[in-house]
Image (cartoon, rainbow over all chains, first blue to last red; front, side):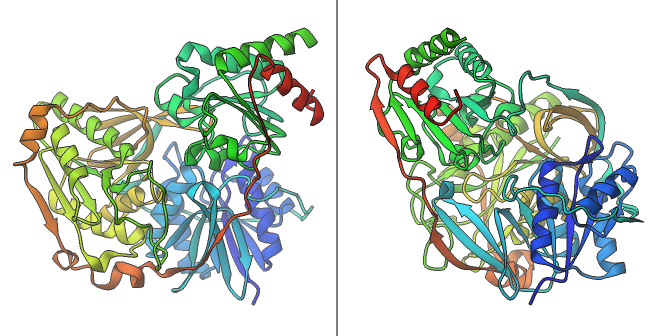
Length: 321
Length: 257
């Protein structure tokens, strides 16, 4: 039995939707049925994008007036379930706001939520796939109660591809009164500038970990990344230690990257990190511990002191011009 | 100012992890306080200290066979601990967990609820916000700094491109990232004091949640678990001064250079 009705929370971003939102729309097309997108601050441009990726309806929660999306968007979706009926499943991107929407919607509808989903199959009903233990095992799961089930899906689980559909019809989906739950408000936004390609989009990612020894040594990572026209990444350990901003973090709680080559420098390969980079086409590791888990997934490993190998690599890259 | 911190005792992440016959995470070994929770405990202690009055209560769900993790939070300075421990709770999902924790938090009526962004074993990451919704509280997730001014909460919240300054009135719920504060180590005096601090163990019957918990309440099931296709380890060389050169060669072979 094919799925007949899929709803997707699509997060607005610079006049379009986030890449993960587009990935979910694309994957929903392969599962069949009608696709509706739910967004906020919707307009004709977003309706065009939603349609281009296969949605026929774009439900718009409207202007959130600075409120964090979690409460109002969950409330709007719960109202929609009441007014237009229950979809087979609601797909939500794994993101800061996506997880807020999912948690609140789950509690509001009293429906379970499956998180860290990286695969969806229609097997006489929806089957979800979840990597566990650093991706060494895959759990397949399904909802057993009344719908809609809620799935929170990790970035880069699917490729985003437009289908060239006509603009989606916009329908208002007001949040209604959310009381105290809607009182968290954004007072100011700060953008931390970074140079070079975006971490998630770079063909080359050079990442540093605890093995660098001290914060100042991260400059070597940035220099190597720049020479390779890539982006600089980091393990959770050195982000937690305050050496680099969170926006550099690769892993379970950070970004998922799938570059042409990922160069891990002084990173042992904790489960939490590997989940975010094991999809890379090629993995190079430099680590002084020959038994570091990172070597189990590295295509090319150098057992050595990152403080010697990395400066030598930088010098070699500079010599090439 | 009274603060509840949601904490979890988890299997030591350094030890190998496995699933049991019913596909639950094997938790039969030693349990420790999730390191991710120590940031919330520290943040709470600092906020109460700054407010000049109130106390920190840690709230948990899980096996009470080993409560060393909760004692650790008490040794850091929390005033009391409450854990809901019941065989009937095995197989409870994130929403069921949120219902249990929300029922306990409701009895405490705190000004602020803190939690980690996600646990380090299950990493579902939805339980705190589910608690906020069940209790009708505003929530701010992924905090990298938390301040309270009067009855207003001021949080710096991580975003994809940097951070937002977000405000909300108390009472509220906040999830904190590891960067928010540096957790203290329990002092000898703290460890001794923790031994006599109240640690209440509740059963699910104490909370009147009926069949909303356990595998029945979860309304989801694991069909199977498979060994994932693994990447094979490739070439590995010990650096003898030629490591950088070898890497350049590899980058050339995959046409990155």
